[in-house]
Amino acid sequence: MLNAIHHVAIICSDYGRSKEFYSEILGLPIIREVWRAERRSWKCDLLIGSAQIELFSFPTPPPRPSHPEARGLRHLAFRVETLEPIIERLEAFGIAVEPIRIDEHTQQRFTFFTDPDGLPLELYEDKKDGSGID
Image 1 (cartoon, rainbow, N blue to C red):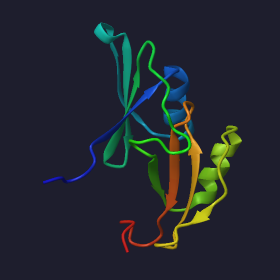
Image 2: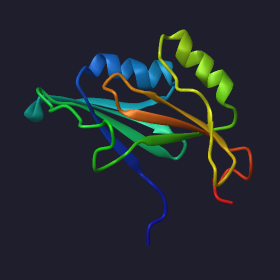
Image 3: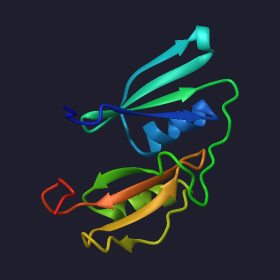
């Protein structure tokens, strides 16, 4: 039986820039960081709630087909209590954030922005019981 999401893995094109984005701009604490010499790859584990984001570097990763809508993982969404403080922080770092929308099914507010490689990230405001489920 599945209990929870353990981690999401992200391959980045510029490890230093992505590590700064996820750890410093988004504020995710680093659990561990290792150099994997056999793969010429960095791996950085970041904590998000009870789950992790695994950030990987590889010598020449292919670009992600993302727009308009490619098959596979569509986006990564973060649950937040209030959108505005996080939007203000992102914009202070020069990160473009889409206009706030309303989820037509839950009536919760959400918005999108992207990481340094264009990976779509969502902020989903959840003021109910925290489950995101009605």
